[in-house]
Length: 150
Length: 150
Image 1 (cartoon, rainbow over the protein chains, first blue to last red):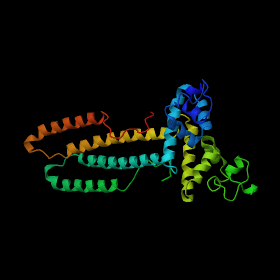
Image 2: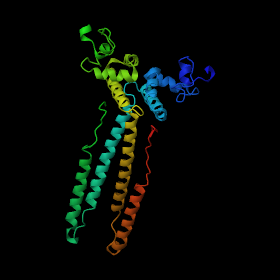
Image 3: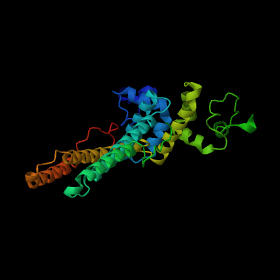
């Protein structure tokens, strides 16, 4: 089926067999998709990886390899590990903001003082809120960047 | 230098030249590191990628390729895209918790009522806090999973 060759077989200038491992995942109308995974993994490695998987998982594998290959072409040093590091940073920031917000809430939810104690209590609450602010900015995070590259 | 071959040259059973592209990043005492990137990318692709980079960035590139290759061996379907999806989920949860906490704070920080209005105001604040809870659980997130696989 030379005329109906998939993107991989066109690229590799070979006959596209009816049971071609690439054909369902690398259609002829998207040659860039195959070129991308071929550049990073090599056709043979992509074929091997797809072959070892059950058929119903191959589309997902082709998609994730394409995603990683695109990342590596855009960023040859870090590939999609750069994205993982950015997401870890985002999580650190959110955890810090959440800790601050929850600590502020805890202070405000404290039992209300008696009428005569209002003056002291208010200034003590303000003191606690200030402490909350400084602790939240000191960077005590529970989740570490597991990639460890950046 | 047959006796001092790097892990790549040992694996490929070839002479390790003094300017071997793999040698600084794939030491002989860690053969599994090279075997891993070779299985996923192929030695030739790893060598090409390192060669195209300035020398000071090659160690980072070798490290990130090793990380991605390990992920792909552990999870042949999703590779490290699985980690990206998990981190996105974690960010969604944290954003939701932060929105809830901040909305609760906003309610509690409202101006205090006059003595005579305390009864009404308290029940209105409780109503607002309940609304905050239900909105925070309705899943209005600003960051979407850019990988789009899971």
